[in-house]
Length: 169
Image (cartoon, rainbow, N blue to C red):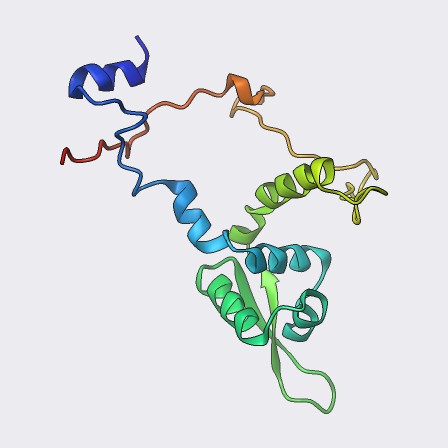
């Protein structure tokens, strides 16, 4: 008997349809990075941008929205600020990626890989992600914690420690 069937037998409710989704990690993550400009800011950080003016120039994002997104990324610990000063100018912040931000690389690379496959220009991708050491193209793959390659069809979702059923109405 699988874990979902056990929940169904214990509660009489279908755990796939009647579960409490208010504690979903995907939903919580999207509250932070689920907006276009936020992902594009992260893309530009990985491409080497670090200053507000860099982001504004390359993204064309409205200043107020860009400032809001950068503040949120700093508040969430995905980016940090460091001060820099160009000769003859005042000190300004530059944005640097944190280890928490680096943990988002597979997610953003997954979006890039999907986009390159299904949404690229007819001539091909605009930017290629290559391994700096050997020059091979980088791709995102799913592996279990023991290192086995895993296909999407082989992923099993089971109730985790924070699984809850919705309250009956």
